[in-house]
Image (cartoon, rainbow, N blue to C red; front, side):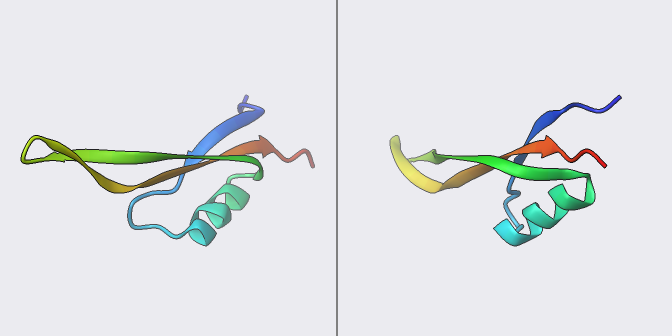
Length: 62
């Protein structure tokens, strides 16, 4: 039995469109989105690295 809802993260070397296509292939449709910044330390200072994007996928019923 598969989950009714799952979060899909846009991978580092993946576009948003590719992530949405991956969701579709797995039988989910996007129903939410959240973003959060990712930082790393450079010389002891937090420095912006990239934006982490996740989509909430809802299982599509056939």
